[in-house]
Amino acid sequence: MRWTWAPRVLLLLLISQGLARAEGWVPLARGVEYRIFQWIDKPATGDGKLHVVRVDPRQARLFAMAASARDRQNRTAGQWCRDFDLLVAINAGMYQTDLLTHTGYLRIGTHENNKRWARSYQSVLAFNPREGGSSKMVVLIDRDADPTFRFDPYEVVIQNLRLIKGKGQSVWTKTQRPWSEAALGMDGQGKILFLFSRSLLSMDEFNRNLLALPLGIEQAMHLEGGREASLSVHAAGTDLDLAGGYEIVLGAGEGRAAQWPLPNIIGVRK
Image 1 (cartoon, helix red, strand yellow):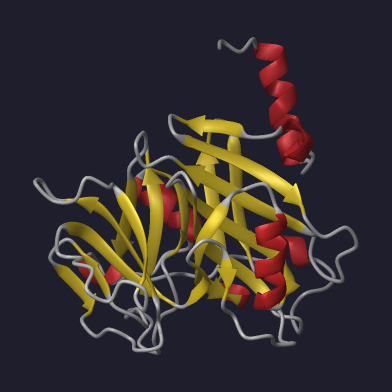
Image 2 (cartoon, one colour):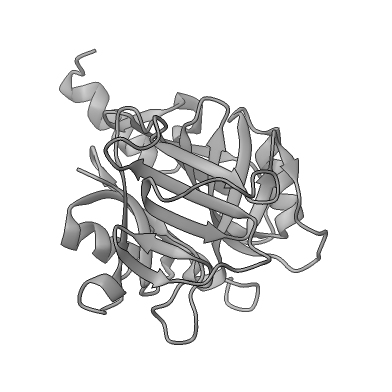
């Protein structure tokens, strides 16, 4: 469908005002689309919105980058996008006190950012199979359900804490501690969803709200919480650099929070 100039400008204005949820999915590129859900009506903090970027791996290629494999310089999600021509960037996961090393296993190509598998991390994302490898471009594996799965055929392997397993079962223990959240999910069609909530939620509440949305999510992993949680979208006239927070830092002026530099990201390249 060809867009005339006036409707396109109007839609971009609606996006910038946070009113696009009624318009459904907004195309960013082939196989990449964006949507805002107003999933909290009266949020105590933040704007009550869930930002979702949905990626069809049959049409768009996921990409991962680690500062340890390049110049060892951490960048905000927005800087990763600008420096390496990415449409979208989100946290790859939590990182250790050296500010470079992922807390779970992480391999990009032949570069192992962290060689050790974390026993308590039951969610593993793998994508971009090598030639002659798996026929699936992306998999999200529950380690306890499939302990013998072979990740060798994949170029990128990322291990993180699990939020939702199997066919939509929340596994996060109920807790009262809330934070902003960056997460990654997979729906029943194998599409990947980058998820970001500025408003503070406990993770069991985050999971309940997520499963109630018309996203068809079956699995999800935690990427990052609090101030480091980030999502950047720079495509098709949409320019967003979103950053999270904790209850102690949210308040007046919270919408202007700056992103934190990140060592490892997942994204989509132009």
